Amino acid sequence: MILEYRISGPWLLIIIGLWHLLFNLGLVPITPWQAFINYWPALLIWYGCKNLFKTIARKKTSLATSSSSIVFWLVILLIGSYLLLPRLGFNVITISWNLIWPSLLIIIGLSYLFKEQSSTKINTSDTVKAYRSVIGEFNRGGNGWVAEDTYLEFAAGSVKFDLTRAIIPEQTITLDITGTVGDIVIYLPENLPLKAHCYTAIGDIKVLHEQKSGFENMITLETPDYASATRKVEIISRLKVGSISVRQIG
Image (cartoon, rainbow, N blue to C red; front, side):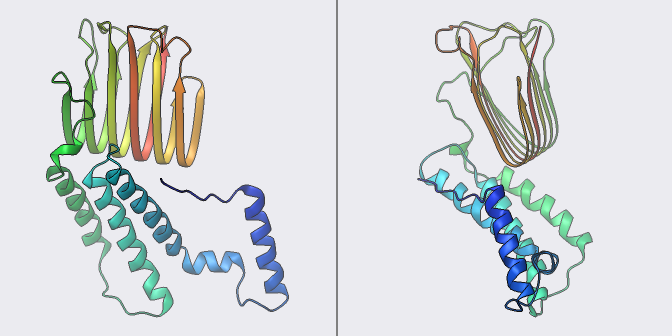
């Protein structure tokens, strides 16, 4: 079981108000804003820890995840620690950002190249098509192509599926797309039954008429005719940073 704790808007206002009250009474040395300015990397560490533990828990329960996700959140933890330690008075080795950002690209790329093969498919059928890409674009569309179960994983880039003119067999077509940074756009025929589970850590999601943006966004949707339909599509998409859009075109 994965436990999550969220602070709602009213509780956040109460905490900030109490903190300011304690500051005005001389019981704490700094205001919430001063604490944020001085120690904001602690939020990066907290966010990285939360998602790292969540990813490990999913892996232990055999839910679809990959080693690249673990590496990504470990890198976030390292960056947060590197930024926070000097603010707490600890000495750290000075590293130029000109060295850091290329190293991050290399780490993410290597994690995709050497990740475990067991995480590359969510369907045991031999008809599943699996693709991996470090950086680039993936487009599938046009007239007369046959839609099929597809698993796609990428580090950075854009993905576009256009099923509006595809041949859709009488079965459930599963599109499972996982990315680190980028955009996912999927166009569907207007009356095609749909089941969707979409998630972004940071970014925007729009599935038909539902939309969310910000942090930790998730939309789970199933059209009323999905369960009884023989020709239908299931979309599973996850992004660390970016946008996901699923639209029906009439």
